[in-house]
Image (cartoon, rainbow, N blue to C red; front, side, top):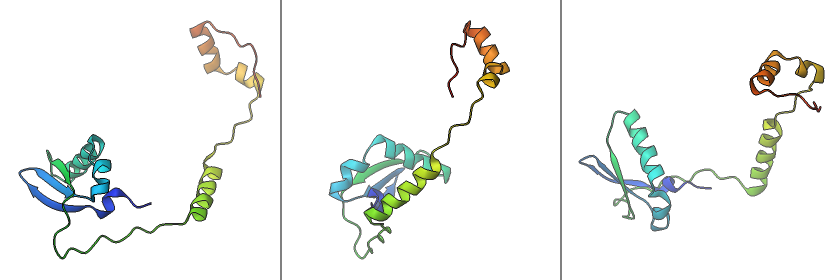
Length: 123
């Protein structure tokens, strides 16, 4: 999926206001507080503090080449990658020794603090 900012272009930067042009269809999607804050933080980290943003649907300047398309992957490949990530990202539960759990000093301290008791330890 292409990002909305991929086709964005600078329109002007004057008096601390950076005007960014995007397509009409993406204007409502990118012109929000979250993006304004994110862009301001990025420019502040580059030494341009107190920059404000305005989005417009103005077309890019004459002669400007369109931005290159991001590489996209097809749906089967995306599903395959998602399965790989999911398979490696899911933590496996540790084997629990009930007696060790009951005798753990932190568990004992928590039981004292909250005046609790262990009813059952399940594996």
